[in-house]
Image 1 (spheres, rainbow, N blue to C red):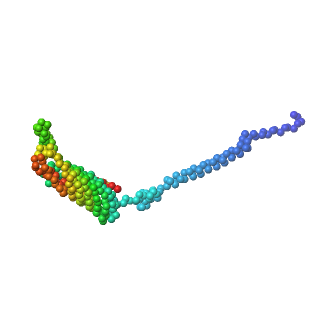
Image 2 (cartoon, rainbow, N blue to C red):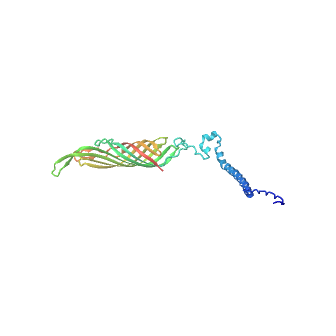
Image 3 (cartoon, rainbow, N blue to C red):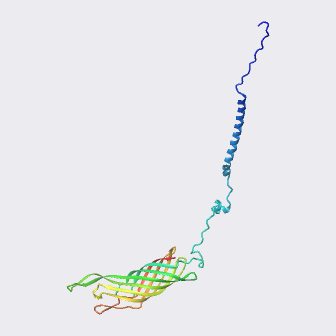
Length: 284
């Protein structure tokens, strides 16, 4: 309007769309992010440190550790194996078990018998124990010895029928001997073989029978004392088990004569000679 002073133009106020607290908050957020990243990096480095330490190459093994793997691993190593019983000196080797048992298969012969099959077969059993050991190698023992031998032969038998007639058939001539005795044994202990000798005596029970006409009445028995001489070689096969090659001779103190129905004398008994293979074991 005329006569009024000109009005001053109004200054426009700047409107800041980002308030101050927002800017400050932004600064705080940036500082917090930097701190978080530093802490995370430190934690990651701490967690990977053991792995880096394991990845480092181990120091080379010494000569003693190479020769003894147990020492390198930290574990106690097994002691070296000691010498076997055969490698030990005679005064340090352990004694065998004191008791023994042996079963044998035998071929037999009747020396002095003229009416018995010459070759037969038999079995034997020995049970014994050691009662002394001299110089760690010489063993003295006592054993019970039982044996059975049989000699058999096919012959033409003759029997009398009820009407008085004679009839022939396939018969047998049989001779057997049971022996019951005791032995004193001396054995030499070597690394793999044990030679031995024995002497003893006992009682023999003999039996004879035949279906032949000339041997009527057909059977007889004999009870005779005897002296026994024996020896052999025992070979160790595994542990305390052994195979025994042995020979036995029974000298009968009596030799009774068999009287037939016709008055003839027959020597059906005699001494007993056996050759056998025994299978035995030492017992604790």
